[in-house]
Amino acid sequence: MVIISPSLLSCDFLNIEKEIKCFEGVKDFWFHLDIMDGHFVPNLTFGHPIVSLLSNKTSQRLDAHFMVTNPKFYIDTFKDYNIFNFTFHVEAGENILELIKEAKKFYPSVGLSLKPSTPLSAISDEMFKAIDLLLVMSVEPGFSGQSFHETTWERLSSVLEIQKRLNTNFMVQVDGGVSDKNAKKLIELGANNLVSGSYIFKHGPSKYLEMVESLR
Ligand code: DX5
Ligand code: ZN
Image (cartoon, rainbow, N blue to C red):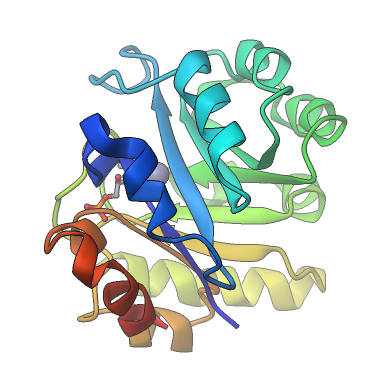
């Protein structure tokens, strides 16, 4: 089953508790948390207090996507919030393999992400073997509501080849501009975790579950 991960960046922040309650009990579901530092990307979102509150208010899995320059600090300081998947960017550091190993100590699943302009060769075979999830960005990280990059199709085909060559089966997550227009093809090309922000939240709470299911 494909996991759907609504990005809370697009939810109604002033009613965030009500917003997350709308999804209670949905199966194959993660909440995607976009955490930005205003340095790796030109935007700021939320940090420790909000993630801590969220972790107490939902039994759904938390999927944290760190768009930050210094992942080590976040590995260390977010470990008490019941985050299921911890993803950071390959562009963010030099000791990526060490960081993956460090994150594995605290988080059940560890992911690596790359921007649309970063070649897959930036991730070594050792890294591919060590991760639980690859987050393929289909927009420039930093903001929701952007258009899907068509280069993602080719990239997903290359990811399938890498998985075959290395005999690994990390989860493949796609993030950015995901909607009912591209979800089916993304799944056909091996994506099994779809992040979606503006598409899911644009019509208001009465439509959330319908929008989630329309992506599977
Ligand atoms: C962008 C974030 C995405 C974004 C997705 O930096 O990583 O998770 O919120 O939003 P949509 O689905 O609107 O592109
Ligand atoms: Zn994201």
